[in-house]
Structures are given as C-alpha cells and as structure tokens.
Length: 253
Image 1: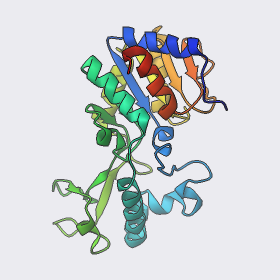
Image 2: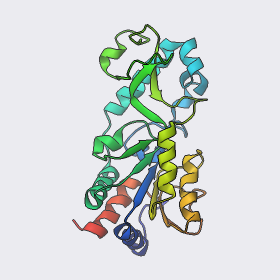
Image 3: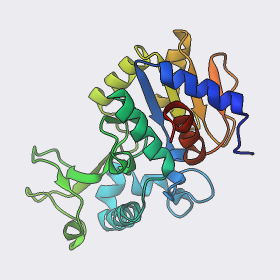
Image 4: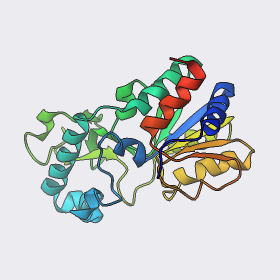
C-alpha cells in the first residue's frame, strides 16, 4: 500500500495534533517492527519456531526453564541492538512541545523509553527486568548479560526468575490498565500506531474515545477494523514516514 498520503490528510492530522490539549498515543507491534523487532504474528514471528505455550507461560518456564531463558536471552539481545526509528523521535518532539504525552503500548522492548519518551504505560510489561517466579517479595532485577551466565537465572531465594512481561494466562498489570482506560476516557485526541486492533483490551481504547466523540488518528500500513469507523483519520503507511511529516507541518523544521 502506498505510504504517501494526500497533503490534506496530513494537514488535517497535523491540525488535530496542534489543537489537542490532552492527547494520548497507543502503540502496537507495528511500531517496533519498523525498527527490526520481530513480532509474534506474521511470517517473521517467533511463534513460527516455537509454540507459545512452551515459551511464554509459567507452565513453560517451570517445565523447561533453560529453553525459555535461552529464547528470552535471544530476544533481549536482539532488542538491545535496535534503535528507535524516526517515528519515535517525532513523538518525542510532540512530547517536548506539549510538555506531556502519555503513551500506552503493548510492546515490551523499551524502544519508546530509549528514544526519550517519558510517560510510557506498558500493558504487557517490559523485557528489561525479571522477578521471582514464586513471588518471594525480592525486588525485580535488571536483565544484564551477567544474569544469563547460568541458566536458568535464579532469584536470591533460590527460585527460578521469570521475565517481567505478561505471560499467557496472566492478567494485565492492574495500574497500567486502569490508567489506560482513564486516558481513553479523558483525552481530546488519540493516536493509534501500528496496532492490528485484534488484541483486547488495547483494541478497545480507541473505541472508548470514538464513543465520546473524540477523533482518532490511525497510522498503519494495513487497513484495520478501526480504519473505516466514523471519527477515525486513517493514514496508511509507516510511523517512521508519517509521524515526521505531521510534526514538520505542526512545528516546522
């Protein structure tokens, strides 16, 4: 699909961004994949090589912790080598100009923070730390190379560590979810970037905004269930190409 947008759509989106006083952004796997992060879905997804149940569940960790931790070590190393693309830095510009830009993400790679985005609500946790699988109360530890010197890595209590991401069968973090719904219910503009709109509850956030009469800017190379809804301005292309164009119109440069 052509990434270039008619100028009037870019201008319309730019006007909405400029006018917004309580804008919120929601991002999905498409935001990361543009930087080279392999996704769980699609032909390049990790799930082509392993069953999800073997790698991303408490049961899988307890059954074969060495396999799971070898996989997470691979994921972490791959993420550490990646850099945020131009779309991330466009969001940093908006954050700087507005003073605040809450961002809700389904991604666990930390690229938003690496780019300099300060207020990130992580619905699915973060790949950068680990904690006790038995919830002994010890604080989370940073995922460093030293942590992988012996597999599986263990907590100070002796139990196996688990990555601080939401595993299959687990609930999303309560505080992150509460804040995400609050933002959707109080923002005056929502921007949805790189999400397929099939993963609940993130997929419900723009619907909450639309039901309130709030406009939603969608940026995605593909058409999604959100694209045709009344109130959605759908820009078909990558975040790395479209977001800088919007920022250029709003702030110049």
